[in-house]
Image 1 (cartoon, helix red, strand yellow):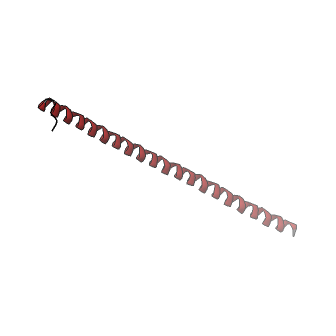
Image 2: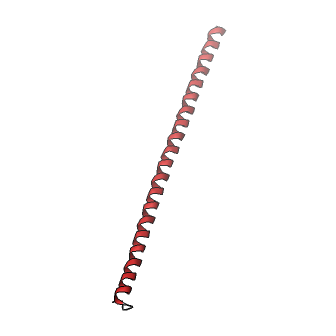
Image 3: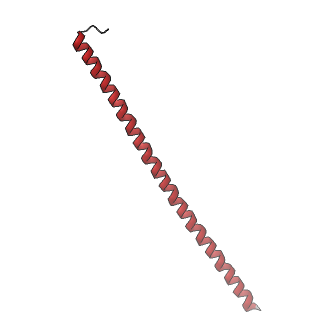
Length: 79
């Protein structure tokens, strides 16, 4: 009788260990997935910031060049 109860207790603890290990592997995989998602978001954010900076620089350079051309063509008479 005691032998069967110890056997059932062992199998119960074994199943608990299996469920714990599967939970920990699931949590570590979810952490890895979360880190991957954050890395993707950071890369996208960096690309967007670089594109915005490039667009702003191009617009500023175009405005400066246009002002220089207008000033040099018409003298200092702007409009």
